[in-house]
Image 1 (cartoon, rainbow, N blue to C red):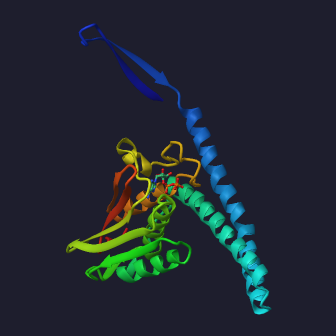
Image 2: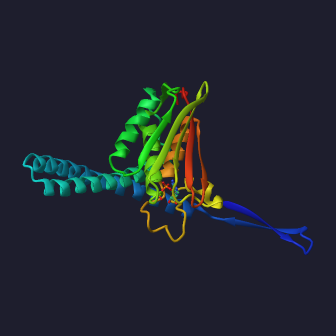
Image 3: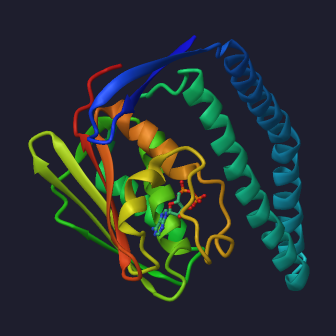
Length: 261
Ligand code: ADP
């Protein structure tokens, strides 16, 4: 049951009475549960044929390139890129289910932070005309955290920076150690920015800033939600500084040595 108390005020704003309501939310919870289950099963089922499709497209592309059939190899490569996009969308849906079921656990190990940043930047640089500049004093070094999940967050922030700055050509990445045990990482773009009153909401599930440009940029509104859930689990925090029309600076802080979970 969900209980609510509503105050009734007089002309001077003094509370003169309270009205209490009690709502049975069992049905609502059941519906939520069914929706979450469906999302989990559907994403899982979509993933299997997609994995085969990816193998076929890679096989096709390799063979066409060997035969120097360049035009068709380009088509096969485009097909592979679209499969990757679909794969990322499905992975996001699977991650949401994992978060809801409390199953997104960190798999921590030692790794070199700057090396990981370089790796993700090189990968992202291949598919964008933006110049991704990395500024680092190599002060971070080895961290103990979840390499795969941190890579997912960095990748997500960079691809958002690319997506939401269509009229700019530069993205700035910085990473540094702010004290003995805290890493500060930031991705700055010079794109559309975020209105002040929407800044905190972008980390909510399915939230997308609405406006005339909403439909120009594809997306489900899940990347930042998943990223913030991952960062929360490291004991860190994620936040954004942004000016509408000027650009955004997405940052996260994580402990260099994450405690075992
Ligand atoms: P998606 O990009 O799929 O919509 P995200 O969760 O990654 O989902 O982002 C949520 C929303 O936050 C986006 O729809 C967009 O409105 C806003 N946003 C995210 N990154 C940026 C950015 N770098 N610049 C401007 N707006 C952004």
